Length: 166
Image 1: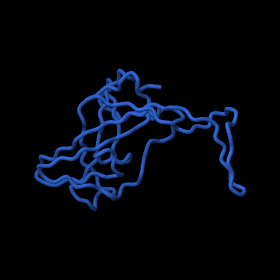
Image 2: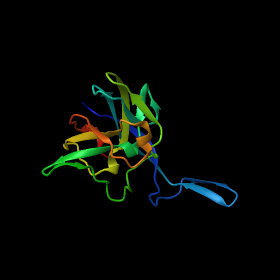
Image 3: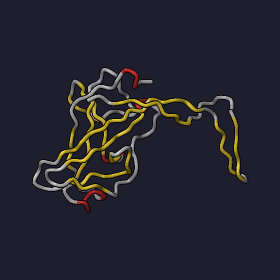
Image 4: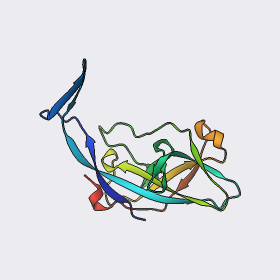
């Protein structure tokens, strides 16, 4: 499965000459620059052949697919030591997302389409790295917002297109 890549504009303060400013009262925002950042979008279909429904955290909809919440899905990189969570790029901050709350049920024998998006520059990953997406799910809807351990569902291995790196 190939991840598709889109370029999006992300505001970044880079110590450059100000392009403009706007203010309301004593508050102000200075627009310093707008730069395109590669964004990878992974579309998956989660199938549930088990004997119980599963619940996957839901953070909206995009083009007919549910959006996976950042706190309930993460990238892993295949290393010599096995699969490890993709490390955040230095200075990129911590990866995360909206708090888990709302979820969508996938009943026994059914499936649903989902999407996961991430800025490739936020992780220490290279186009040649073997990646997989790990999605958290629960058999109990109330457990989604708790500390109960999730079920981990992993995608097949994929590579980022070369155009996905900054």
